[in-house]
Image 1 (cartoon, helix red, strand yellow):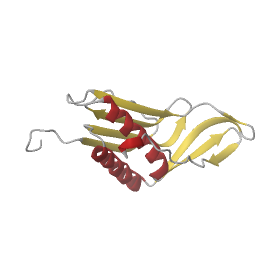
Image 2 (image 1 turned 60 degrees about the vertical axis):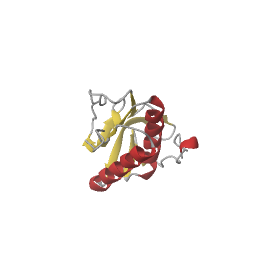
Image 3 (image 1 turned 180 degrees about the horizontal axis):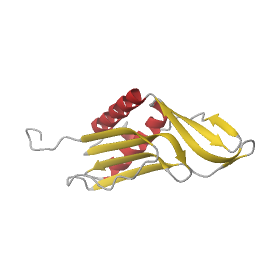
Length: 156
């Protein structure tokens, strides 16, 4: 607790062997909003490779966790939020399983939504986690996605 009686924002990050399980707990009593993003493997078909079987995530774990922690701290600095939880899978993630879970706890929903959107967009762009797509007839590496404005708008 700080000198003015306010609890400091909490950060929890982890790279976890798949599959990920959804945390049951919400946020602290000061949070009026909890925004949760769950990224999961969706069924899809490629004209060349057939049906997607699973996604395989690879990373430099220490570096990835350090970067996730840094991004959570940036989110806390930019928006009025009580805490951030980020869990990302490593290993094989089957269709319908979660690969990333982000919880942002905040006093108000706007901060929670903006920070959560910024976190997933920035994580996909900046964190050293690589995604290999395993198809019926082989594997390809995901090319990634360009960084969007991530809900920065006038908050940037």
